[in-house]
Length: 142
Image 1: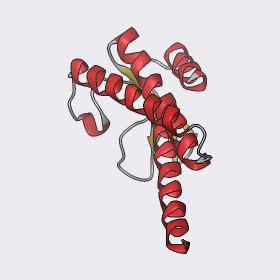
Image 2: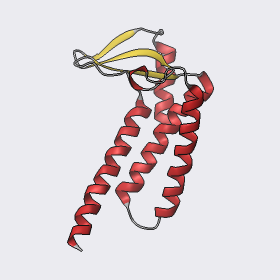
Image 3: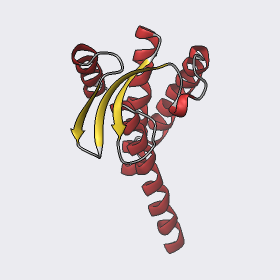
Image 4: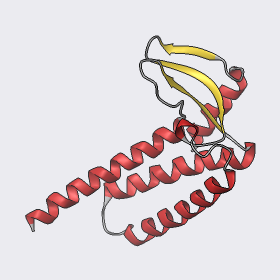
């Protein structure tokens, strides 16, 4: 969350809205945008929806973390922690600004502009998928 908010602050302070700067030519650029929706501008302007979904997600994730804290499911707990951090990172923007600051633009493919919190969410989902795969293998051995 801290890195996410720091990067968003830096972008807001150093790039004008809509300004683009190449980071890795042909691969990745910084593009300062305000996102009032989700990826591909889905549900644009539906702040109430994102507020409700985020609050429910936080409660569910914290409940899962409390229930599983002593079971030794490392991948599961890391995944939940990353998803929680990403959700809260974007939630802070929505509450404070009314939109999410996005900045990373892929130059080699058409993909929504994203931020550190989005990367954290995706990494969390990947960790949970790893947990599921490893758990299934473990269950088959039994």
